Length: 318
View 1 (cartoon, helix red, strand yellow):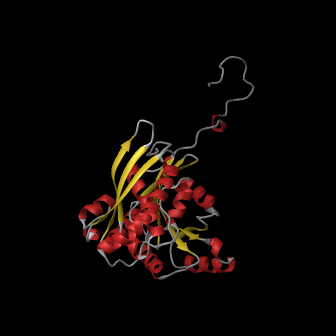
View 2: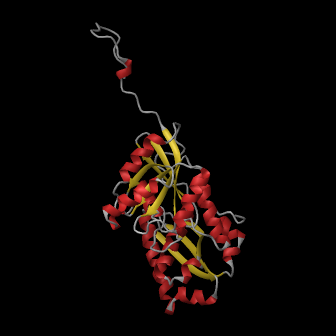
């Protein structure tokens, strides 16, 4: 409301002291690191909502996923990327390429290092690549709840001499320790500019993709080591119901009949358990009732199938 222009004024107006809304900022922040360094857990913590699937297994994340958060006058668009490692297959190469592409396109890059594991071969490759690119990054020493403080200080000191890091933060993506420090830094370091997404939007990922990822999380959690990496999940049907619920049909693709038998389980018990737990998680994620139907199919060589790469948003020719 404007001030009244009538009546005596005892002091001159001080326009500089009048409250002005802070200028808006917006930018992309890539979360990169070796497999299982905690990127997806941190993304979920930063956004305040579960978007990325999290499992104890390495190389769970296969494609870039955006998570959108508001920090004061700043809209931060986090990019969760696949773990960076030495690729052996076409799918591996595409995943690593997606991670580096996410970093190249970002305004800020956060390198996560699992402090309980230290600098392994994969992390060394990332450090070398960042130095070759002359890229300044934020260093986040993650999982600090698992190591002693003396070890943390030694690791931070050693890494400060091995790359261009500003700042170096100690965090726990799982417990939230130090995460607010990262948020505050990004709130003032990202470029000035208008927000790119509506204030209430959490991600640009289609709900069909998020649903497929939730079911794939259960595949990783419940099946043997060899099956999750040979499988993928696609949402084939999505039907909005008049009562506000949603009917979802999904297919879990595996590469061999023997893998299908393992995923099916005796009397179909394992696939039923996967579907039941995925449905419960989907209802939590979407905040409404979900009718989930999960099927198993064999698709030999799907990891060399161009259509599967396109469904995952990966570059087949990487």
